Length: 249
Image (cartoon, rainbow, N blue to C red; front, side, top):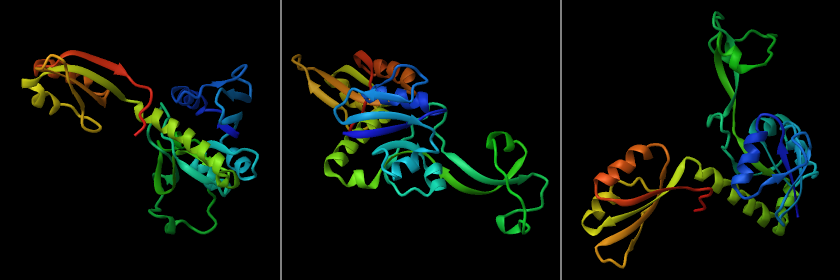
């Protein structure tokens, strides 16, 4: 039903990992193949392109749905529907910043200070930041899931797009979190549950043995190494830490 375009290059591996976590595994004959498939009735075909090409291809209707950066959407001026940001890079959670910078020794302190006719070039912001002073941030860019306007206007395709977006967001949300399951005596229940940094209230079930309760909750992976011993000391028993692949609220 949907034609999907995914980015080649630096985001390629992270994108494949995200789709795999969302149970939308991308299959192709080799890493060099630009054509792929996903075993899902909502996705008819998959293609890989450079991120800078994706907005124009989507706008022209060559694909229904795709992933690219806000920087390339802005640069091309493509008119698209955004289904939301996907902050899934495993390298950094920070956005791409397009900045206007000058040598540290330059007298200019703002964009208005620049002399008329000055030449501006841009390449390798990571390297130039070592000796350039930033005057202004032109754009902050995250990766986005975007769609062709006409395709998004089709109710059946829009429903499929929203399903895909839900699965991808759920996979991203699950990163950095784990499921904790533990048994807690009734006398210690209040003290133990107060220690749990739950996304929402923990699920508590009274066990057949009246003085015991089963507790389940999702907590951040970071810090669980100190949380589990503390829960044990507070009276929790049979503590299980379980990885999770998706969180759909």
